[in-house]
Length: 156
Length: 156
DNA sequence: CATCATGTAATAGTGAAAGTTACATGAGTA
DNA sequence: TACTCATGTAACTTTCACTATTACATGATG
Image 1 (tube, rainbow over the protein chains, first blue to last red):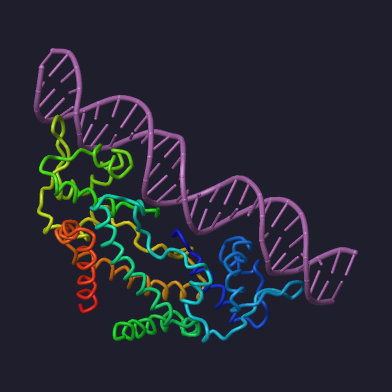
Image 2 (image 1 turned 30 degrees about the vertical axis):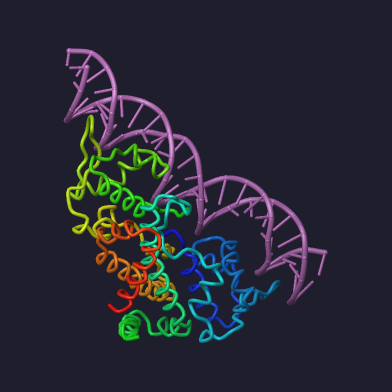
């Protein structure tokens, strides 16, 4: 289990919602993810606030999409999660008078921020309906789709 | 302060060693980094095992480079640290029968691994003597050098 | 009004890195 | 030889962010 599974979790949840006609409860998704319903509500709160989903209380309530999957990108979701750190590495301190440390940190930042920009750019290109298509294609189909995906990505 | 500062720390240490003629003790570096000498030895162990540095005991002992800075890349150091995670995000589980989860994870992995490959490729291009040059140029010079660096990077 | 479902604060658990202590080993020095 | 310096490493403890759980309030449905 990795350190931060929120992005993966949210995508899982959103696609399940999309495949259901009826609202999906936090409890249902929590079971599917092997976690607690509060965790589900917590990571969905940002998406609700930004208008990607709606939550309905009472009987027959649960989560519903308020936008098409094609209108939501991974970047939207990432931002809705509060833009958590993408890269594990960092610096020990921000305030150092040591020139060596400053130069080292400046150089590392270059590389790390470049990687971060790349990830965010990719996130911005990927809409959820493409993910949904992968799911519908099934395992074998998914592999093919990903290969096409990777070709497309390397050309852009 | 980020969660993993080892890469930054090691670079700091190696450049300091390079700038000194005499061996540098773990205690000295620990003071410079505001940490403990055991932490220094711990993160340096991998580099010693791979032959990038040598450690000498007793009076006048400490850490010494056993290769030129130009012969060491950031990638070498990263590997010597044990190849720790570069990207913060991951999946909740590796074993799921849920097709949605499988498709989501496969897609995320694509993007994340691509970012990881990019970072490692950059690491492989950056030799420590280039970092050392940045230090010697000082703050203003360093800025210019980084700009050139970034131009070079975007062309490759 | 009983039940279902979300909303959220408060608290505890978890895992990896960082920090610390303790002690063993080896190298130089008086 | 004895002493000091410095590394090597095991065995903790601490810290920090994410995850998990508990508890209770609010609102919607039947």
